[in-house]
Length: 127
Image (tube, rainbow, N blue to C red; front, side, top):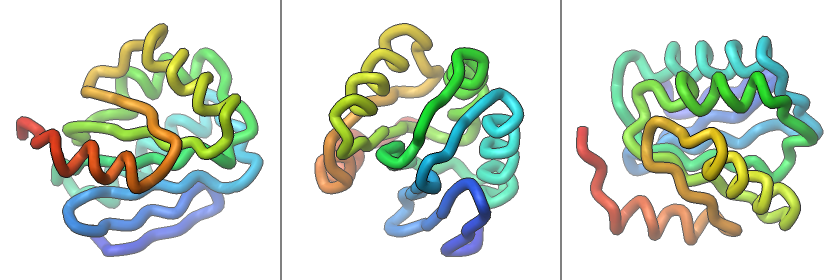
């Protein structure tokens, strides 16, 4: 995978075997956008599994069909996911997403990137 990639939806960075995904400001995620996000990430990963930190702080909204899709297919080739939101309402929405949609890989939400990094470093993934 290239170390960095950016498009109109997100910035992807690979650092220390963790894939960082930062979604663009005011992103509205519907089913079609969710398909594109997953396809872009999978293309970048080139069939390599990674842990991921997804900063969702700037997302404006995500519809229920997109949430369902992401909970099933959004974690393909990921071993663990740490969602990060510095914005309290999105933090609580992320917790709701995990509780209701039950992603296929271990997924936890944090209020800072540092907390997410600590979690992923202390919890080895099973490849």
